Length: 364
Image (cartoon, rainbow, N blue to C red; front, side, top):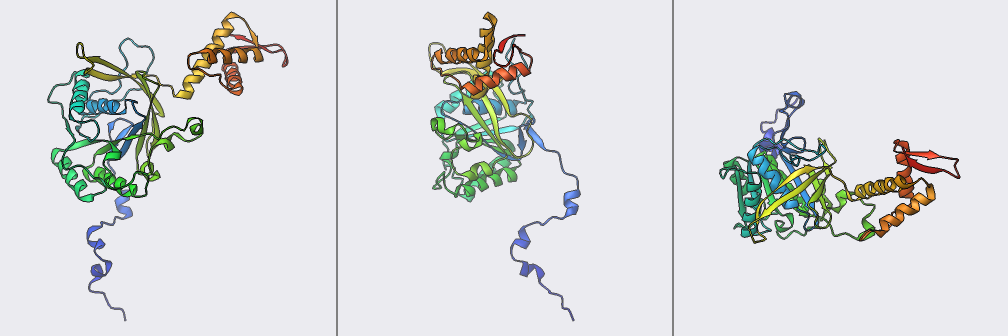
């Protein structure tokens, strides 16, 4: 004879009271479509990181995106009177909270003001910011994350930007497994508040040639659990002090429309000072470092062949010498140049004449 347990929930433990177990019926029910703050790029809720080397303009780019979300403007509009069709994004208007622990109050105010002026936004735009607040945010401490969630929910913020990760980990070492707790708390924050939480972070220091073969996502500084926790990671690359930057998606959990897009930084200073008066980004075609080299090689191949036709060996030598002669330049590998010549032939940009041994190349 079977007896009915009068207290099944008691035996199930405390989790039975707080964890809501769902069924296939729940899974089969209507699911709301994903809401994007930046269409095709930044969904809610989500946890994302924007990272890059020092001086890569990562914080400025993120502030530019945040202003476009706060105002509902299109992000990375094409430069006026520019050629081509760069990647641009429509934004869904939402309230923004920017929390700075890196740049300080004066610099943060200067930068936020400059981006706002660059987009000609009114003072009542739904963008709020705080710099160096007390108490300090320690993302390893769940209690302050809960308090931050209350602040976010009370003000209905849908985008939360934190600058930067290395300054909010408390006693947790960035390269330790303890980062799983930090990232878990930030994930909970995004889900609880149904918001996009975007963190500024840094790129690992380059090891020169030793970095050549590694996946771009592995250049994200810190423990592997950081990248593993993310819905989106964007790497910002900038060559020297160029105003043109490349943005690469190195981690996308769900939907990925673009692997790479570019932006151009424009700005004005206050008269007779170096203080920013206004600034904003425009969309522009993007090349990674390797792609830029390939573009340069193709251009030199065409330049040489406008003068006369060359054998394969002579053309490769002239291209390598020309690249090496540029300021700070170095000769590309022989196989790289040969491969690009073959690609240009296959694409119909070059013609081959003669037999295999005496083959010469010319422009079409």
